[in-house]
Length: 373
Image (cartoon, rainbow, N blue to C red; front, side, top):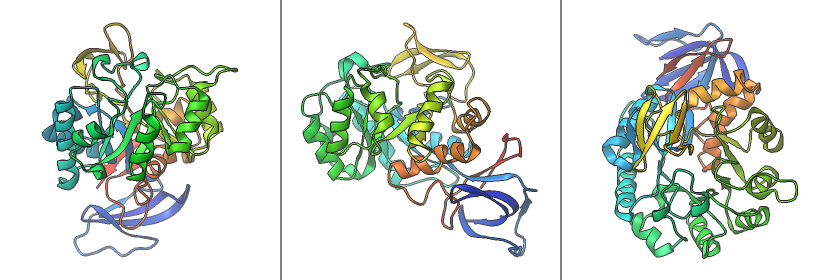
């Protein structure tokens, strides 16, 4: 496919008059005045925006398929997300019995190593449990949460850390320092989350190797002027990437704007934290074996606790621009390049030769037009 006359997101800005060739599911050539090949499909964007595919580093489920259900569900997630413009993602686990988590990791590993055509890439697992503070569990199940244990962790993941990209944990738990130092040395990203940590404990976690904060402000202490907690540390420690859920429910618009001013788009990671109702109508669903009621775009347990979101990455980008007033350059970076960089994926999230499809097309008013692959 030859794409012509794009206003393409390149090196953090928009470049007009760009031509781009997609072949065998990857970007093969970028330039201007590219020659059309014999029988090659040609699409004229007439100046519309052309973006790299989204990268979602925190997503539990999509359209009725949950990462905890194993390989077949993860494969369906990958196919469905590709049609939404997602190029790559981290299927994210929930608190569960150890054997269930082991099966989920095995399924994620299988899809990562044997990807389908026309499907988003599975980059590995984001393990959001079990090493969380039960007092800040959110929609995680208390009975499966406990202090980090390296032997247990290696057993759950089949002894191979290369297929786990992020582990969320509470750094105040016993044994956290040794665990963080060990798994970060093996290349796993540690994210501070579901935690009652102080700001000082959060900075210490960064000293030990943590580089990420899970859904900042949610399931952690509130920001207070004498006790800034995890949010204060996340906003001020340049070593930390900060996740944000831009659905207008998890975070007040002013908090999102504050996060951008403090972190910049280079350290602010838009995620969906989506559960199985994402892409589905309102109704009754499940997350981690618990009933979730979805109404008006909000996913909650029966007691009212937020239970992930029904957000998509395309809606997150739209919200950042239209609802929260972010510059398009910043919103695009937060949904593509920055998430990829936060887990050490330099090729993804930017328009460059070798980038895997899909790409997304947006009109001049920042409404998504189509997915190009």
